[in-house]
Each structure stands twice: as structure tokens, then as C-alpha cells.
Amino acid sequence: MSRQMILWRRLDMPGHDACALHLDAGQWHLQGAAVWRDRRGPARIGYDVICDQDWVARSARLQGNVGGRAISLSIRRGSGGEWRANGDEVPDSHRLADLDLGFTPATNTIPLNRLRPDGGGDSAALWLDDGDWTLKPLHQGYRLAPDGTWCYRSAETDFQ
Image (cartoon, rainbow, N blue to C red; front, side):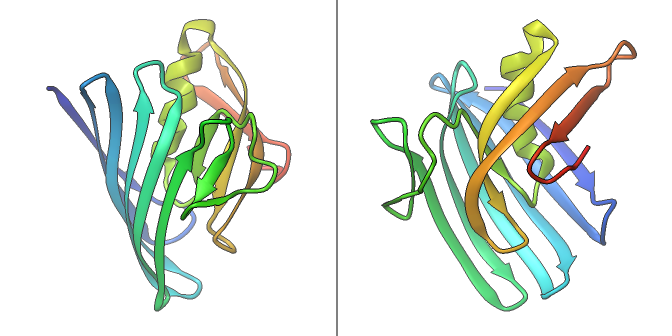
């Protein structure tokens, strides 16, 4: 089992994220920890995201604190295609292919690996908005530029 690791430095505020990626028994595991200075105070979240071998997100587990608020979340794709958070169905979550944890760039790995052979495309994700810590739909576009870099955009947040 080969393990790839990366360390990111946040550009919008002080912080880092360390993530490991490995394939185990036909499942991709993204395991990491992010620490940053949030507007609400110091933040630390550990995460474990599991995808199938075709890079379809199946589940995630998060635990930590943001500004003194405890964060504990178990997210799973249900048998009907819906997403569930701590056992409860997330509204408007059917047919959302990806999982985007807003506090880490690690989950962009999921659609990038699935879309890579085609040079990009659009994806609908269940997004954990770290502004209010709620789960909501997010439509994303990924395009491979001629220089080999990826371009990202999101209609809902107007982020590029």
C-alpha cells in the first residue's frame, strides 16, 4: 500500500492542512488534519474521507473544534443516492456526486481524479460550508488549462 502525503498552507488566513492518500482494499482514503485561525478562534479538524476505486465519494468522518465549538460529523451516502449526516437525510442531496469539505482542498482530489481522463467537467457536490457548518449543494466546474494547471469555479459562491 503506497501512501502519498501533502502539506498545504492556507492563503486566505494563517493555517495548514496535512493529508495522506492511499488505496486500501479497493477504496481510496483521504485522511488529514487542518489547523487554522478561524474568525471564531483557533480551529482544528481531523477528517477521513472514503471513496470507491472509481473516485465516487462514499463517506466522511470529521472531528475537532472551531473557536471552542465541537465539530463531530459522520457523512454517508445512503442506498437511495441521498447523503446522510449523523444518520439524518440531508435535504436536496440526491444525485450529488462529490463531497467537498470547505475547510480543506483535499476533497478536490475526488472530482479531479474522476474527471482527469476527460480534462475536466462539471460536478455537483455535497458541500460542508465552513462559514456556517451546514451541508448544501454546490455546483463546481473543473477545467484543465493548456499549461497543465486546473481551473476551478463555483456558481453558488462565485469563487474561481
